[in-house]
Length: 451
Image (cartoon, rainbow, N blue to C red):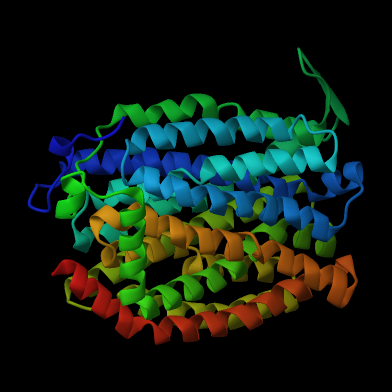
C-alpha cells in the first residue's frame, strides 16, 4: 500500500479528469453521510437510553461528544501521518469498517461503560475518513475549484445529520411499539439497541466503494521526501516548523472554526431533545421536520458558501474563507437565540433552517482554507492536527457544555433551550473575532504556499 517514489506526483502533473474527480467526491460524500448517520443517531435515543441506563444529561453528553471526540482526535494524529505516506483508499476502507462494527456494537451494550467503549470505537474509525478525503480532493481539484468540491463533500455531513433525524426517527418509531426485539445469535435487545444495529451493519459493505475509483497522484512533495531521505522525526520537525512560521494563522483558524463547531454541534445533538421536552413531539415527528429542514438548509448553505468563496479566491481574495465565516457566525447569533427563546416549535424550525444555511458548511470551508495554506506533502498531518483540536474541543465539548448548563447552571431538564441559546450567545461573537484576527495571516500563508 505504500507509494513508490515514481508514483509521487509533482505539481506540474495534470489533474484527474473532472468526471473522475467528481465521482470520487460522490463516493467520499456517501461515506461522510454514513459517518454522520452513525455518529448522530444517538441524539434521537436520549430518553430511552437515559431510562434504561439510569444516567443524566451530562453523562449522556459524554457518549455524544467526549467518548467519540477524544479518541477520534487521538487516532487522527497518527492517521494523518499514514495519509501522507500510504494508500488513502485503504485507510478510508479500514476506518469505515471499524466505525460500522463499533456502531453495531453500541446495540449490544448492556450498561453505560459498554456503550461508552463502543462509542470510542466509532470515533476511532471515523478519524480515518476526513484527513484522507481532504488529501485526495486537494490532489484532484485546482485551487479555484477546491472549496466547492469540499463544500459538496461536507454536504455528506448535512445529509448525514438530516438522515440521522429522519431515518433514525422512522426506525425509533417502528421499533418503539416493542420494548425489546429477539435477534438470532444475539438474543434479546432493547428497541434503542436495534436502531444502532440496523444503522451500523450496512457500512461494512459500503466501505468497498473506495476501490471503485483510482487514487490521484500526490501533486507536490519536498525534494527530501521524494528522495525518501526524511525520517519520521524529521518530517514531524518540518510540520512544526511550518506551524511556527504561520502560527497566527493556525491559532486563529483552529480556534475560530472550533468555537463555531462547538455551537453547531451542540445545536445538532440537542435539538431533538429540545423539541421533545419543550413541545412533547414524538421521535418520528422530530425526525421528519428536523431532517427535512436541516438537510435543505445545509445544502443551500454549502452550495452558496462554496460558490461565493471560490469566486472570491479566483479574484485574488485569499482570506475569503475566514472573512465569510466571521460574518455568518455573527448573523447566526440573533437567529438562533430568538428562534429558541420564542418558544414556538415552528419558529425554532425556521431558525434552525437559517442557522444551517449560515454556518453548517463549516467543515468543508475550514478544510478548504487549510488545504490552500498547507503544502501538499504536509496536508494529512496538518489536517489531523486541526481535526484533533476541532473534534476534541468542538464536537467533543459542545454537547457537554449544553448539558453542563442544563444540569449545573439551570438545574432543570426543561431549561434545555436556555442552554442552547447561551452557548450561541457566548460562542459566535468570539468565533467571529478570532477569524477576523487571522485573515492577514491566512493571506500570507496561502501566498507562500502558492509560490
